[in-house]
Length: 197
Image (cartoon, rainbow, N blue to C red; front, side):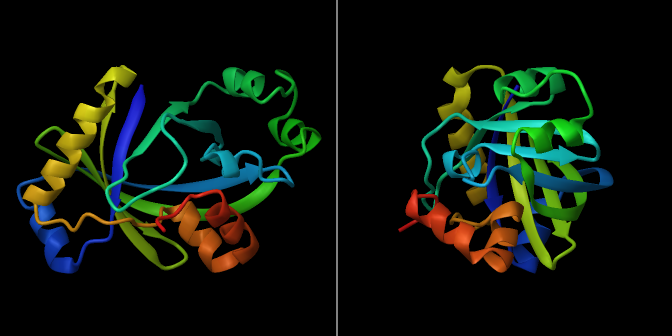
């Protein structure tokens, strides 16, 4: 599946409006640990390798690097560990921690998120509270084929505006963590065009 999402930083009133008549699904807590090598060759090409609650995940971009105020996040999310190991040219056998270390990957960031999940008019709404004092909202949908991306993106933005959300660039959890804790990497991400000019 392909994940199409947009991040928001709503005011309290905007969030109340967004969640009005939304179906509350559940509350989950999960921990993310992100990895990259010393050259940050994944992050600087908009690829995200993480372990989420002991499961390896890799997000691969389906669009160009760079964000504008209306940019959507478009990723293929791979959760099959053997497939991820092959993509990264890692050993398909052996202890994951050791295999990552042998491949030159080290921990870049680690944090825990408490997420409240909602559904409204066919869209998933995630309200995230992160343990380093950050909150954001993601509106997302899943599509089966790349050809559906533009339509899905337009639908998310229209839905957001209809529900009183302000459409602008918002840092994701990882980027916010890096902005607060690793200015060198943040500057490198800026140089390759990650953020709005």
